[in-house]
Amino acid sequence: MSQATDILDYIDQNGSITDNEARDLFCCHRLSARILDLRKLGINIVTERITGKNRYGTYSCARYRRG
Image (cartoon, rainbow, N blue to C red):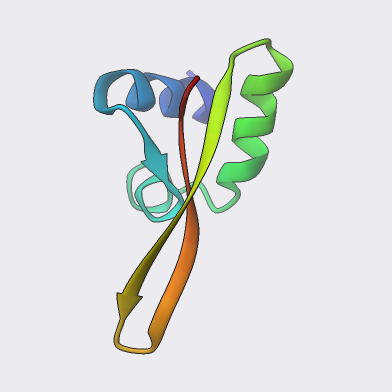
């Protein structure tokens, strides 16, 4: 199984995935590249921008889910 298919399975089971989850679960440091691979296969993946706070201030990241 490839990283892209592992990520797609995770999205199907959990609803969505973020960069941090992909890094922790699959050692994937370029989630956007794997999402592009899935999109090239014709899979509809939607990008949602989310914001949060940590000890350094406000941050923004992407959450990917099926469209």
